[in-house]
Image (cartoon, rainbow, N blue to C red):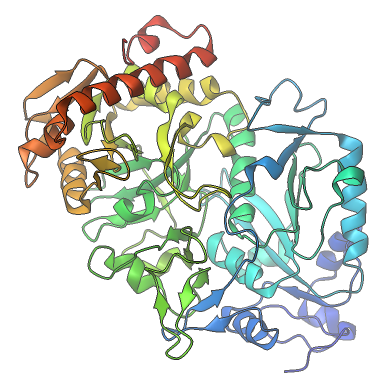
Amino acid sequence: MRRDNKEIRGGSFYPMIEDLKATITGKFITQLKEQGIITSNIHRNLSVKSLVDIVLEKNEGILTSNDSLSVRTGKYTGRSPDDRYIVDDSETHANVDWGKVNHQFPEDKFDMLYEKMKKHIEGKEIFVFDGFVGADPDNRLSIRIITDHAWQNLFVRQLFIRPSDADLESHKPEFTLLALNDFKAIPEVDGTRSDAFIILNYTKKIVLIGATCYAGEIKKAMFSVMNYILPPRGVFPMHCSANIGKKGDVALFFGLSGTGKTTLSADPNRMLVGDDEHGWSDKGIFNFEGGCYAKCINLNREAEPQIWGAIKFGSVLENVVIDKKTLTPDFNDGSLTENTRAAYPLDYIPGAITPSVGGNPKVIVFLTADAFGVLPPVARLTKEGAMYHFMSGYTSKLAGTERGITEPKATFSECFGAPFMSRHASVYAKMLGEKITKHNTKVYLINTGWSGGPYGIGKRMNIKHTRMMVTAALTGTLDMVKYRHDDVFNLDVPETCPDVPPEVLNPRNTWAEKEGYDNSARKLGQMFVENFKKFGNTAKEIHDAGPQI
């Protein structure tokens, strides 16, 4: 297939720029020029096959034995939170929760960097995806994502919501994201911490990403955008997965990366809405995305058959080790990173809901991976308890998810997604509480972390047991069992659960050293108390729902 600087491609081969009006609207080119993107070598909304062909031709990746596309992201194999910024201006200054997560970036430095990036791609080959974030037409955001790598264009095509031909013809982006992997910042000149950067400008509706190939930065940048713009519209943005039962009952699964959102929502007995990001409007829930981004370290067919089956032609594998002779993915090899990933469209999961929308949730599950090994594997929460644990967002950051994380590390991440929440945690918690009250939603805390001891001594919670606990919560079985009160964590814990050994439900029983458990439990309880102080004067009933150490 011919590829030169005179060529423009769309969903199929586009012969020459002189034939522009017959193949691609002049409006699109005008929009690019208005955005300062000047180049004749443009690829817009290519098909999967066309993108795969280009990736292979440019040696950006290889096809594996199952026809999925394997790529490596180089230095950056996870998100780089210290290199993420939000432009501080008159719009954001009073609305963003500035601090360790949301770093301020000057307007003038942003403008200078944007101009340098536009100049950098003049005359170069670029890949454009025009589409949407948000499956609900009333709340979707039209986006334009421009990359300098074909495989990243395939990634966003599979992850975001793909437009119809009619949508594409009239598409006008509300937000534009420019990701240039081969553009590096000069910290002392550009005001960044390193050569890599992720900068969100909510006022000018532009996101800039440079020097990092890790595609998760693109996905999470757009999630951050939705988390900022939706609350004033009365829509609750959530870092959660969602599925629907055969009777139409909707369930949500909150949790940070690696806690089980994707795995537990991919249930063969339920229909998947989405695995990571959703909004909750007055009508119900809707997926932000059109695809899934699953962790696949130690992936196996028996434990996660739906994810296993989704890895095929059109899927993108990030940093998975591939056998050089057989081209077979080795999902157990974490030598490149523990944060190996698979990106694929929702319709690769059998029974996935299209369009990915649902009613108001009946059950919410908070997932936490407790590295101390002391939290009960399942507990029932009151509304106030749900707001407390939502604001606390306790979990353990798992290896590889962020640069420098090589083993689980206890952390508190507000709203189970602090790196992506631009506003104060209380804004999102208030919306959660209102939704729970209005729809009488039941909430459970489930620990997918360690049992029998802390990380290094105990073992990761048995996934089969976790699935049984989730099923019991969703089917109402946990409404009919006896509960005991955990005095340390101020939680109500079921004494029985079908197909789960009773001793597993009480984490103290799984420890050989009972005194060691007691000391670790008190230590974690105190960490909850100290962490919650940062929220200031919260309502007494919410404060009292947490550990009372």
